[in-house]
Length: 117
Length: 110
Image 1 (cartoon, rainbow over the protein chains, first blue to last red):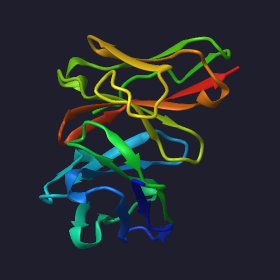
Image 2: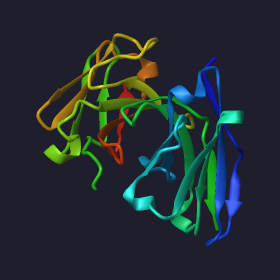
Image 3: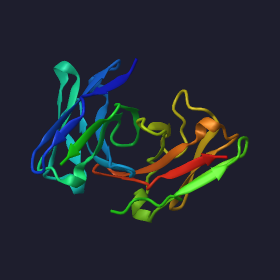
Image 4: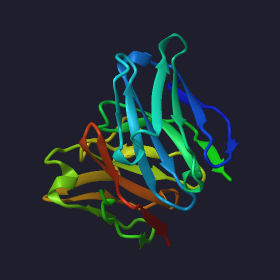
């Protein structure tokens, strides 16, 4: 079945970086994009950016420009999200989600808890 | 860019219908129909229930329907069931570098 499986929880100190992986299976990886969305404790959803799995094209939300880097490894059908210079308010669950040119997000990973202390 | 405006909470009884609104400025919707809705149960990843304003993905109950008029999109759930109790989020894909989510609405089925 179509699924996205993310890497496990992370605990980081302020100023550090975190890299979260998202392994795709059950579909043709390059036919879709991978988006990243985060959710702070008790809060709503915040879109971070997307990467086209075929071309590697990226677009980032203004709030994260310069601090986030999205990449993919087509050989392993895995997407990655690296967030640098972590701050305490980056503490959140980070989701990857399959989509098409940000129009919708139809398959979601299980989420990765990132805690910044 | 501010979040789209949703009511913080709505409630209804089993069998009833409810509507959740999602409002923004004209620029929030970018003049396009790229509005989607997501259902999120506690501790679980969101689930797409409506895409492109009114399209239902395969497997989503026909009790869920979407619409848009001017700067307000709406999600209607008919024949409320207890399992519909969840948070609901709208999202507008303004451009390929701007996606705005609503603040979320908590639905309680009494």
